[in-house]
Length: 217
Figure 1 (spheres, rainbow, N blue to C red):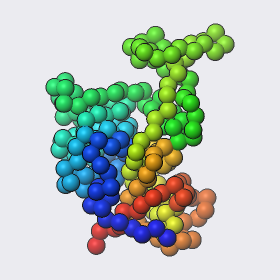
Figure 2: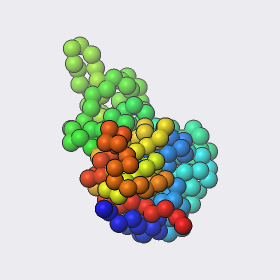
Figure 3: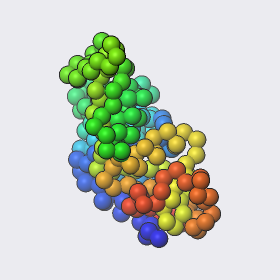
Figure 4: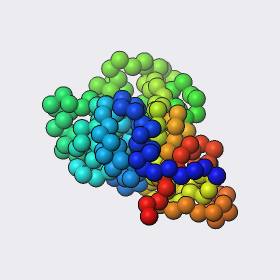
């Protein structure tokens, strides 16, 4: 079994300037204990990759509030006015990526692909600086794969071998990100003995997970 570590120990593993993937959807399914520990550590210069920047004071929004983030690569920032203000002020760089394209680029990064072809953004500002490839008379953008130094996942359950399950919207990005990072740290709601999780319920196999976050006492 893997030895569970504290959220503070996990935050200490993530250096300033690292690229970090966060699972979750508007704060749901985000690894809140690790986020709180990064804020407490005073992390700086992070590039965060995920669906969104949640809300002020919620999920990844806490990192925005605390000045931990230098760049956000997300599908939208519409729910977080703090991100918007910091982007306008030049305090944060924001790379807006269409949601489906973001998911597929992460999948490509995790599966060793050279990129994906998508019609999304053809003929718009999204096309600027990208290769346009024609397939059967139709134009597609070549979107490059996305990988990160760390993936921080929120799981419902983990067994002692780090096999993970997810619930509801936590399933959207967490399983993809587990393949697309150099180091994967999972924050489960519950750690259970091997055998409790049926094999066909495992969404992320333990071989992909480097560290588990222990449950608080």
